[in-house]
Amino acid sequence: MATTAEYGFDVFAPKSAARRRRLRGIRLRSPLGIYTTPLLLLVAWEVLSASGMLSPTTFASPSQVVSAATHLWSHGEPSTLRADLGISLMRALTGLAIGLTVGGLAGTVAGLTRFGEQLFNGPVQILNTIPFLALLPLFIIWFGIGEVSKIAMIALGAGIPVYINLFGAIRNVDQRLVEMARAAGVSQKRLLTKVILPGALPGALIGLRLAIAYSILGLVVAEQINANSGIGFMINQAQTFDRIDEMFLGLVIYAILGLTGDQIVRVLERYLLRWRPSAGTGRA
Amino acid sequence: MAALGRNGAGMSAVAVPAAPGRAIDTSSDSVTATSVVRRFGERTVLDQLDLRIAPREFVILLGQSGCGKSTLLRLLGGLDLPDGGTITVPRKRAIVFQEHRLLPWQRVWSNVTIGLRNADRRAIALQVLEEVGLAGHVDAWPKTLSGGEAQRVSLARALVADPDLVLLDEPFAALDAITRLRMHDLVRALREQHDSTMLLVTHDVDEAIALGDRILVMRDGRIANDHRVDLDVEGRARGAARDDLRGALLSEIGLPQSAS
Image (cartoon, rainbow over all chains, first blue to last red):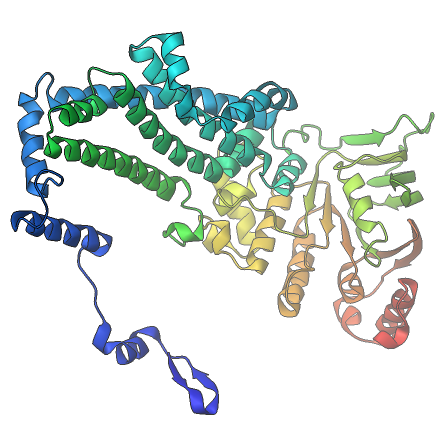
């Protein structure tokens, strides 16, 4: 696009030719895409650490974090990183599974029926006003300091956003489509599987994304307040023994968990919502 | 449709307890509405309306917006119940709405056969899509279609089960003038191949003249005028008879004739 301002005209031409002409000097495209800045920051961080500008007592360099990871993977004390990661993943996935199942079922029933709405909506809205992390002390009294209180915490954090988003999504399905399906003689079962649930899917996936984020949040808090295994416990240990590299390692692992969860939802969206023009696949 | 269509000649009477002992019409008419009343709050939209449509007839319901023509269509389609009177319509019926109402997450062929339970739904869809000139779009997603294409898919969806009655609620109102004329040709062609009775609701006088065997003008919640159109395609496009009919219809729906 080029502008001939003096005459008050806009001139539009094919993007490729015009763009090159106009932005010749500043046309930069990194082969690393959106990972460019994070990688540059990592390099800068490493360089600053190596040069001593970042104190090793407050900042661990990326290479120190990596070597801490490789060492702890099989030689960690009192437990190895492999074992800690395993137990953390188990907690997160179990809690997430329970939260998704219960929240998903309740949200579906509440979305589809007046009775379900009256049954579930009140309690869930009340729970939703309490930051779920604040319930941990109570959960420890109710469920003990073992696995149950932690998994219950994660399940609660995951279940509420799934319920709320699914309920809203089902209620917001285009009623004109429902009417069309009824007029076309579609059975009750097909109405559910072909019209209502697919229509609620975009909203349900937002719920899933939030559920994953909240389950990691629940995991962090549950493991740091009371645990003798897991990533949160590892971070606490590292603080006790002043191992800054291991503290950073714990944070990196949480970041990777969050990123992985988000990528999984992204892939799901690309497949399940491929009918949307914005999904990228375009024409069938 | 398939769910209701086991008995081809089946009629479903939409009766309301408020109409005491009114006999259901048993004549050969395809559609019968007797003394139909529909109120929304204080407003009486349909006021003792009577309507009869013969089998295979193509009837146009013409009127200004707000005259109750869409309300009547919804009652005939079973989407709404009357407050009084009796309506008898074929059980095998289909509705074409003003918006295409395609499910965006189902491919075109699956949209067309949404009401069917046959095993070879895709083959059936392909056949009907060929009739509306969209055989090349069987596997397309609805959001990739133009407005005219989407409305043709919704026509195919209505015709796929060979209904006895097709109700069309201003189906071409949102289309541009040229696409609308093409759709008129398409509807005429489809009439040759299907035995359905058709009722089309519109506020467009020219559309009414182009398509109808009979044009009913709705006013004040009733059928106010009834015109039989005995013109061929050429006669519907131009000529003195057409101009007279057009003038009459315009003044009957409440527009001054100079508006033409």
